[in-house]
Image 1 (spheres, rainbow, N blue to C red):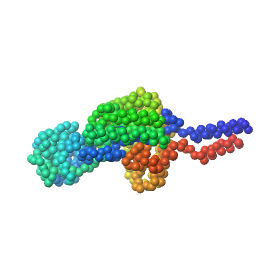
Image 2: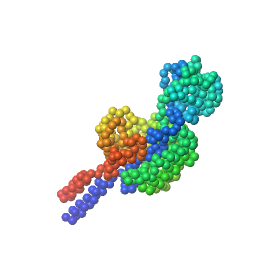
Image 3: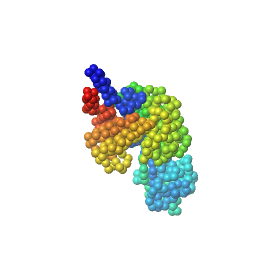
Length: 533
């Protein structure tokens, strides 16, 4: 009987160990846990939708870098068009507007702009009496125009070089020879300006919109108040063990980054590491914005919506230098958990072979400074297969693939009700998380997700169930998850608001994966029964 009892005791503790021990654990995190993280989005990389008030004081704030406009002559009632999308003449002869009639602004000052065509050339006119062409590859003074506006959507445009006003001629051309200062009546120097898109509100737009002196005040105030040590204390109290911190490439040139970027993000990142260490929180540095932009979006600090990073080897080399800078500076810091080499490269613009090459070189750079820091590889956004990075053989150890899950940004989700959204998490997302977490190679990280959906007027209970489903499914990811984002003007995106108001209940994620008291007792009783047979 003593032998049987000893066997039962051993089986009991073995059952406890198997049941309480998590399936995966992340090296560097305490208690064999995984990442339970929050993104510090909108802090060191600006996204205007997170805090729109940052842009409130910019003069002509609807004409920031990247704004798309169309111009129509009030006398001819025709649209200004760059023939063939750029590279040749400019005409005023189109009854309707499409891509050739759309120009993207590069802001020089609050009233001075360059006009970029669909194919990337700039409108140019060198002297009084000249005709306007769309042939300049880079903008200088001859490509800079002053825009005068009234309150009815009408504009006058004149040369910066000598102040000559542009006019639409009866020959359907634009020339810089209007003979006097035009009024706002129907004259050949007056155009109707329609703003077609004003979607970019990133670091470039904020800094260039204000100008250096005012922008420095705005950035300093934002960096000192948006995320503070009190936020780390809040995260610690609610069981968060990791922060993912988006940074821009210009951080490596702090305190004097290239214009128009504003220094100070490096000091803020240093503060975050100190606060994290005080509260036993780990840090993932995420290179969110690469030089030239890897996806054309504001969070990659694109100036005008174009994606230049993959087409310029200098940009890629510069990005690797940034990774080297970050790895060198923080590799010995006890709060560092990992470095994410690039956020959300575009599937359309970034070829897989180029991305894999960059990731391999980035991995080697991080390993030069640290044998243990995790190297995180973000999946291409679009329709790319996540397995492409699992099969790429980028590095030998501590590799993580980052997927971003949103029930948004796709017409598929606009037709789902609350129950459909929840079932999509349990069926589609759960199957992928389980498959990738058990695959050979990198660990899986759900690096961005949010307790929001494309559904109007969801109830508090429905949000709770949606959040519960995501926490249960993403908790199975072998590396863990990170919520987007810590603070946000849109309340359901705001982690702190969700927690304080009970819309997101972290108890689901902080209990041991798969733990159930009833299943646990059942396993013990079954083991005891077998030993008595």
